[in-house]
Image 1 (cartoon, protein in one colour):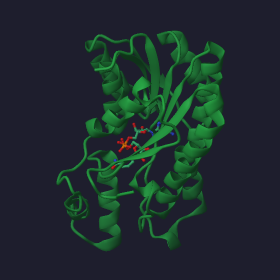
Image 2: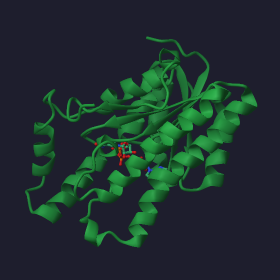
Image 3: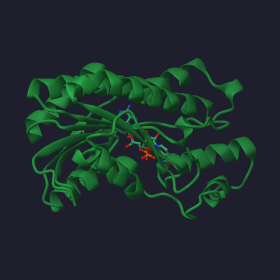
Image 4: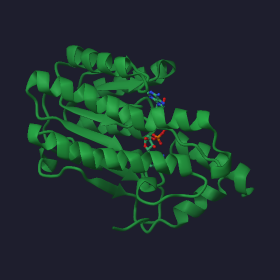
Length: 262
Ligand code: NAD
């Protein structure tokens, strides 16, 4: 295991799912971690804080709506004050929407773009300000998806936001390289979280297949033959978060058990 003593990372959307898995893995790697999630997730988030403390690392819950730029700036300051600096930001929070393209509303587009895309800009801006203040060569890790590499039907809004995350990752990597910061993204496939419960339920409403069937069909198409876990994703984030990836930037790494190939 790589030692990251005294490094600090906020992980957005870390009260549950993939974010929780990433937070726990970074703590195992020696990071102190801020669990940044919506206020209503406080109880779950405090549960993750406890799990991290049991691993012998420091952690705090920071209430944050990632669509609020000022709040993101404050959350970064709060994290740095509480845990002693900032070295990595994991822009993990995101939502899915499952709807035929002809039915997607303006309000839905605005919502998903604010959560999945605007937040990545806000996070990068807030974190880089802090890295520069501290003289730290920082690491930004963004949540993409297999839907960032291939557009998926009935997930047009979601796919388009994840393509955007890929674009931001590539552009930011080039802009921030002269300052010594790296920017990369992880692209999970089918992870068994609340997000896929929702996708399966919505796909059932659209295509009438029994509950669980859409998930099963997708999992059946995975070469490694099993559903993905948050720990599978967290292994890639662990790599992007420390010196093993110092010469890697602007990359979107598929971690999907063998669904898409580049
Ligand atoms: P999840 O729904 O289980 O968890 C998402 C977390 O984000 C929740 O804790 C939620 O409270 C938080 N969140 C939502 N809106 C927020 C906001 N405005 N501000 C702060 N926090 C907010 O989802 P997950 O499956 O763990 O997904 C995490 C990331 O991984 C997302 O970006 C998602 O698009 C991506 N991803 C997931 C899958 C999958 O199969 N589950 C696949 C590819 C990519």
